[in-house]
Amino acid sequence: MIDLSFYNGKRVLVTGHTGFKGAWLCKILINAGADVYGYALDPPTTPNLFEISGVGGNMTSVIGDIRDYDKLKKVFDKFKPEIVLHLAAQPIVRVSYREPRYTYETNVMGTVNMLECVRLCDSVKSFLNVTTDKVYLNDDIPDHPFKEDEPLDGYDPYSNSKSCSELVTHSYKKSFFTDGRCAVSTARAGNVIGGGDFAEDRIIPDCIRAIEKGEKIIVRNPYSTRPYQHVLEPLFVYLDIAEKQWNDRKYEGYYNVGPDDCDCINTGDLVTKFCNVWGDGASWINKHDGGPHEASFLKLDNSKLKNVFGWKPRWHIDETIQKIADWTHVYFKSPADIPKEMDKEIWSFLNLK
Image (tube, rainbow, N blue to C red; front, side, top):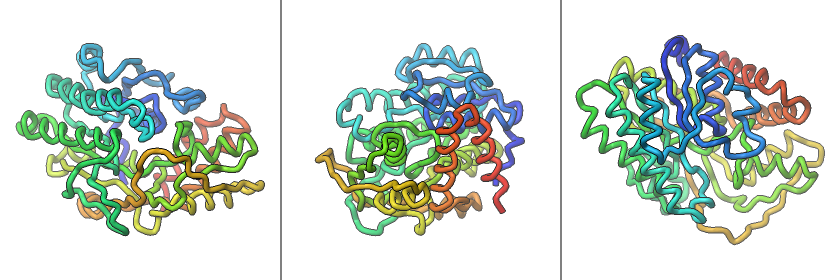
């Protein structure tokens, strides 16, 4: 497991810091003693974890669009980050069907802008681009876990734009970062779930919204298999990659970050587990709404990450769902206690035997 003392005093820029994953990541970095700078749009939902967590009071937060190169460049010039973790994105598949141009501008040209700033900023020693498990050419072959060397060709505008983001990163890495000045990697994370996600068209937030209203949970694609994992799993991998490649460029690469096979389950089973943990009569119904195409099967081969970093997943799906329920109970009862609950989960994750 990563030694967070590495980050004490480091200048770390996180893009997308106002989002679900970004807020959790900033919480970890702040706890580790890092000097954290964030660049992102306003929080994407109301409520949102960025405000509930209180991380904004312990970091420098700049509200800006990743498509705005000039503003982004000024952030690099002023802050002079040493480590850059690029999470900013348009991350919702269904939104990408409604707004494909915006999705490509954000996910592709946003990555170009980031890498151009990194190229021109001598202080940056470690850069990680966070993409997605959906970057691969997916022909819905049953029980086929994707490996890092397979073709990149996402189907929908979100997935495809993230495939392009990977290719942009590969090109910049080969063209501009062979001198050893800055290490560059990408991380392709599986479906991330956890307390504090309020996004639209995501299954756990849909569960919680239905429970709040006393309604049955609507599941659009109950038989779709996904690599579900707690949000802390990939975040600590990102930090481990950024640290290791800072010290030794042999750790640069393109990494799948997903759970073991035992935790790749279909959405119906995930929601059933959540209802069982929550109790109080929670239940769901299968109601496909005729939405756009989404792959029915997606699984990642995580063996490269295990072999290179000696990594293994920490929380299985049942433990993950319990953590989400615990977080949500605290939020319903006393939102002011959420920062303490987040610290509790982070400590528990790090100290798991």
